[in-house]
Length: 405
Ligand SMILES: [Fe+2]
Image (tube, rainbow, N blue to C red; front, top):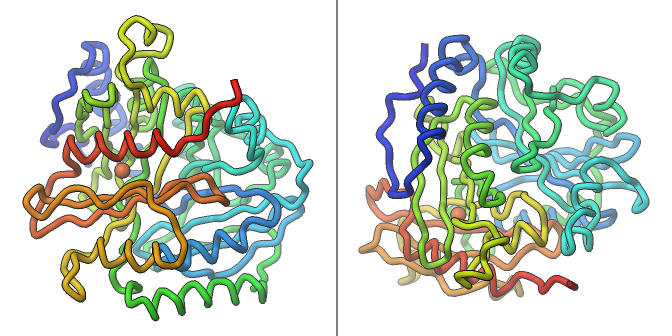
């Protein structure tokens, strides 16, 4: 049996007594009832974009990430493009809505927020986790009061039928799915007709040719972490919820005082590298917006959540350690991509001495998601530095659209 509570704790953010007590109880119970053993790592991420936007987004991801276009699943309401690095890293299921007037629960979530509503369909839906026994995992989670879409609802939402999917979280608005796969099997999504679309293949090949020409194709590595922003008061509940639904453990929380925010990290319990199952990070303001007029502190995380709703803020990709043409790899990669017209919110920050360098791209025009690049130097084991996170958070806040009211 895996023990989810024996890990070293990092961080300087103080949690409530409630959190510490229930964290221990929740992980103990999860281990004891077999869920930790039955739930594996992240198999896939699901992202939805507006009608007509997936071609350009695939082209962008081909240039800026290690992902390859594999196949398109053509179903009644969506074209779902399967993007894959290999079987050692999660897939991306990129769903393009076919009809602009289409409406479902995910669109309704976007439409609740003053900036989110500008792109009705563009949102990160959540992750699909590996399960050794999908029906047993779902039955146990339902018995613990977690809610799932019924088979009929999944058909109506036009999602793969071999994946069980939770209803969106009240705290993160993300879903968690479960699918089965034997160790030696490839991932298969039972969803619509499999087709390779000529224009999509061509857009993908253009992106990859450019990546090769720029000599950055061997430098950008798989996903390192996924960062979700939540309301201040939901920080601890969002962490506990994700730990209940996954087999991750609580790594620790850092207080980013400069930005009145905290970064809260969970990692996979099997010591798999982040490339196989990325860390899940939750960011929350230290104070809710309703008291912000009293202290007038910076409040970029809470402002983002009020504008877009709780949701994924960025996908971080690792960059191979080393130098090319006299530049550290991350600077080489960023210079090459920026020369292709892609924006970045700031210069790379951090240094070899501090252990890592990071940067945020501008939010994608197609998904609204930011890409982060992170290069760790030598044997640096830390996840981030306070100063870097404060600067990244500040830079992202300057780039956020101004709400219409
Ligand atoms: Fe990050």
